[in-house]
Image (cartoon, rainbow, N blue to C red):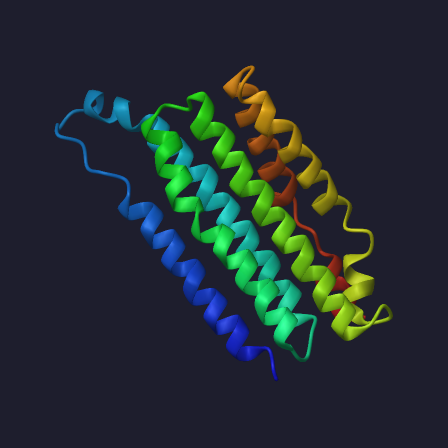
Length: 191
């Protein structure tokens, strides 16, 4: 089976995830800037989550352009990733509405950890299907950023019970790390 249906379906799900997140932001009941102040945590949560969803969409796009075909295990690995991404609107809203309190921040990290693990698994399943000498395998390499991200999430979840802002700092650091362009797949495909 070709990759086009998988890519189109995934793009649609990710677009819905972003739409749900923005619809969760409620309009304030005031017409001055002070009425926006209570929405700052909600907006910060939204920006962080939008960034993460955008990072996943971008990297998923690159991943699928490095392959030619998909099979059943790939479809299920992709659904596993989409499942965890679909929970981002819930934990985003909960975290923002509760002004970054302990349990919502920790659960946000659990969802990020599971999404990161699911993405890592999808990449491994794709490499297994296409071979260790494939363009994709060469492009992914050791996947240092993927491994560091998972370790960071594992650290951030229990840190939320010590100091929520440490966890939030880790989440922002991981997002910043991924915003730095990773051109491995693009450059490998060009060669």
